[in-house]
Image (tube, rainbow, N blue to C red; front, top):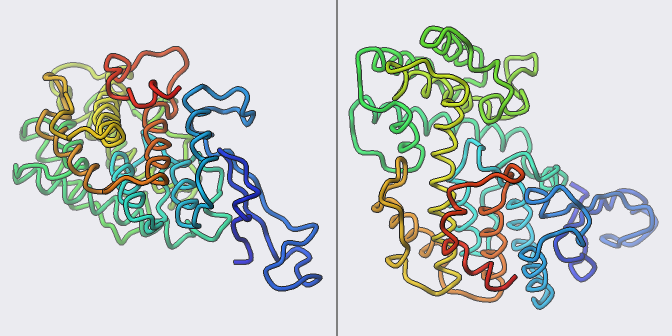
Length: 369
């Protein structure tokens, strides 16, 4: 690739700049930035606010950007981690594993997993040569393998070991003959090495129609029909998220409400967002406690969690603290960016979420705004 990150001293806080050295590069020395170089500038808070005007950003974003101005030059690794964070999406297939990836990278100061964490990065990493077709195919395989393992564990009624397992177990509920029959079909159908989505799509659509008389994929709301990526007209969708969206929809249709009531649009979405909001709260509280210098054991958790229990919230906090490691100025800034991202990513305007009832989970931000 002929693209590279623009020298950091010329990049305004909250943004990233990429240049293309091939445009007119023959007129200068190797590696020299010359007039006419192509590239782009990205607002790294785009997944928080759709405005590119810094004057419209809230006080928490402005306080974090002020932290950035006090840092010495960031390494390319730090900048790539922040760029990847700008893609974060709470309904993406890798959520909440995506937060674990970012915490590990912040802790090691090394951009090690160029996986797509959402659709909001506006192709920054792609412009630098990351997230090519091979990387996205690797991510598809990893996601499908994770669901295959979770479904196999559910059939064996083994204890869930990670967030993907918990999601699958939560959506399916207790085993019944009908659920076991469908999960057996899914396990036989999912092949991480097969890139075509046709077999999964047909099985999952058919299951939703069988259990509720309608296809969940006619719903326009996210996450089940996220940007209609899987309806790209071919066997391979534009976004690897699509495979997991299909699976989640069928699992909710089959699962805990499948035999008790007609599962309308609202309940399908509700189950997805209960899982999302409980994990958002748990991870925000964990990152907040690291920034505040408090022990993971002091993180409080509601007693009525459906997908995140007191035990699993403690495990999340311990994992986050371990991944982030010893605090320094750059880690603190990156973790602050992550806390703001986790708190505010893609929230509906004027909507109340679970995290709003627990201001202590983001107290570090409010104290600095």
